[in-house]
Length: 73
Ligand SMILES: [Ca+2]
Image (cartoon, rainbow, N blue to C red):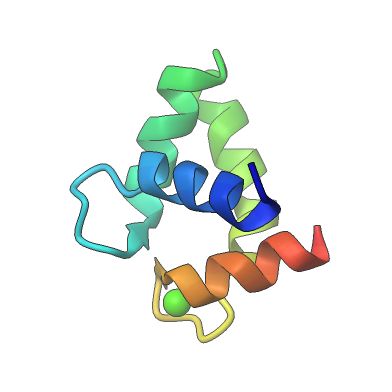
């Protein structure tokens, strides 16, 4: 699987309602369910990474923003 295909499959997992953008709330739910982190751990983690991913600050993560974040990770 190419990097981009792997990223897309992760992005699709994060996009719980399948509308093509990932909201902070969706990411929050995903990390709680999939990473065995408690509420505070997820909150701390997302406080750090979210601003680096949501480049235009609209509180939604587009596929383009997601790809940029992955390239820099
Ligand atoms: Ca955004």
